[in-house]
Image (cartoon, rainbow, N blue to C red; front, side, top):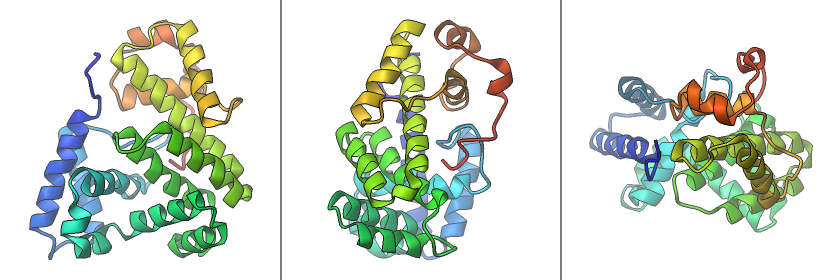
Length: 251
């Protein structure tokens, strides 16, 4: 249960998939790669990184994982820049927006995000997708929490009308970290779990923003395959709420 890296198998699958994409790069569009990613995950029986709900574009959002491994893990963006421009153009724009936000060039960041949005406006889905890129980079080991915290806080400054979306993403991140801690065997009881949630929220700069245990349970089961027997010892789970997938659906 306490495997050193719970994402190791996921990373290996993504590495192999990127090799296939490189071999077929002249034949593939972004839509083709999204479909290939979906079929690969289904075959290997792994779930995309997600919250409570499974939005219809979840595999397009999961392209962030391929992007992060390709760019930071394998350096493919340097070797195959045209491939990255063709397949990962959205993720590149999101990272550019993040860079502008960190540099406090807020008007430039907003302009980039408007360009990526199908409606030409900054909405919750666009902001969540940008944050997902930073979150995935952190989760897969290519960034640190201090940088992620800075991105979250400065996103609120840059896009104050989407503060609720940022707070939602804070809960999403903490839920993942708690589920991961349970998986690793680092979180073993309710008292430590509560302390861990609050400490993580404090480090991120959003002290009063923590996820409910029902939310954590869904991620723990769907992404980490943690048995109910273990979760019931650590989490206070409301069975009725556990089946409610009406919120947190932008991840």
